[in-house]
Image (cartoon, helix red, strand yellow):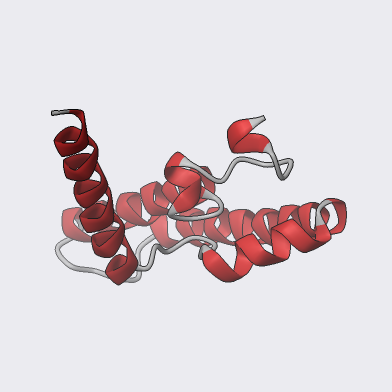
Length: 114
């Protein structure tokens, strides 16, 4: 079964955050709001804040709802995954260590083939 042995994907982007698509969508709406702030001369209270807040709240609610459903379906495996991987915002210090470990593993495998 590979990546889906526990019943859900834990590789690729899903090894960095549990809801990468939700995180990206929220980031897009926050960026749209920041573009509107820049376009209005730095006015932080402009009409675009309504859409950004509503859609961010929608994805927060959806994210927590799907977390609850997945935890009910895979209680042990998903609880471990939740402890290991953040919901929306990646832990940057862990990303750099993953990159270093991956580079080390690649070097070791290349050296062993020689």
